[in-house]
Length: 213
Image (cartoon, rainbow, N blue to C red; front, side):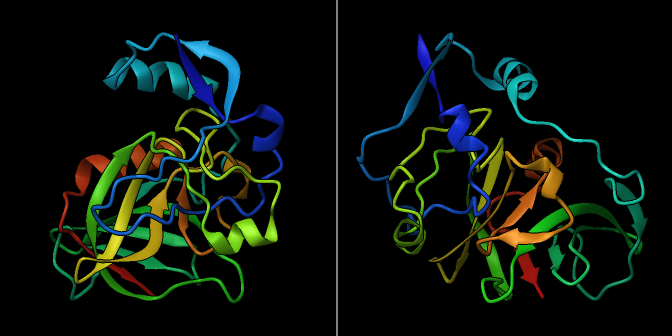
C-alpha cells in the first residue's frame, strides 16, 4: 500500500503553498517524507490514478466567467507558447489563427511574483513538494518534503521553468486551494486548477517557451 501525501489538517493550513527548490535536472533531496495514514494501492498509475486522486483532491465552484475557454488572442508569440499575464491572473496557451486557450490562475502576491521568459525544462505528474528554504524560514512548522498526491500543494501536474537550463525556482502547477484561483496569493509560482493543469500539461512539451509578464 502506498501512503498518500500530506496531513489533511496541514493541507488546509498552507496559504503560501509554493514550489520545489530542485535545480533543473537534479534529483529530489532525500529528506524524510511526511505521510498520512490514508493509503491507496501502489499499482495506481496514469489515468486510473488521475481518476481516483482527482476525486480526493479539494474542489471549488469556479465562476463560469473565468473558466477555461478558447478565446480570440492576437499575439506575436508563436503557437505553443505559454503566456501568463499576472495582472489579469490568466494563463494563455497560444493556438494558431489568433486564438488561445485561456485558463484562470493564482499568481504570486506582492513582492513575490516573477516575470520574464523561460522554457519548460521538465514536467511532473503528482510531483513531490520541497518547500524552498525561504518558506521554511517563515514557516518552520512545514515539512522539508511532501510526497505528491491529491492534497499536495503542487497538485496534479507541474511544469518546471528554466532560463538557459538554470532553474528559475518558479513553477506552473496545480493546487490544493482551488478557491483561491484568480487571486494573488502564492509564493511566486503560477497555480492552476488541477483539471486545467492536466489539460495544459498534455498540450505543452518540454522546451516550450513561457512568457510571464
